[in-house]
Image 1 (tube, rainbow, N blue to C red):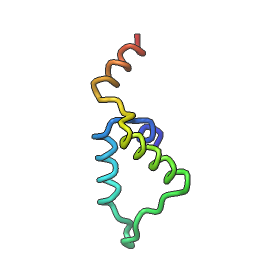
Image 2: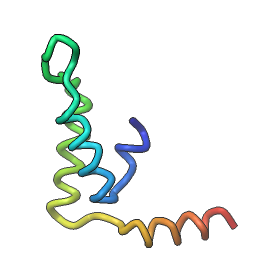
Image 3: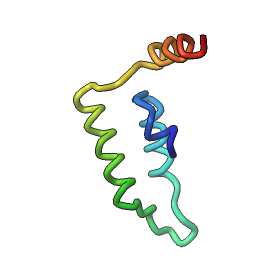
Image 4: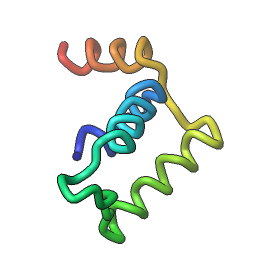
Length: 68
C-alpha cells in the first residue's frame, strides 16, 4: 500500500484503480476502503487533477541519483 500511495505515476495509479475495480470479494461485495484510505485516494486524485505528478522517466532518474 505504501508504494501505491507514494507513486505519482499516472499509469501505475490507473492500473491499480482498474485492478481494484475489477476484483470483487467472493460474496460479490465491493471493496470497502477505510477513511484513511479514502483520504489518501482523494489526495492522489487531486495530485493528478493539478498535474502534481512525476513521469516514470523522471522518477527513474531520481532513483539513479539517489542510489549513487
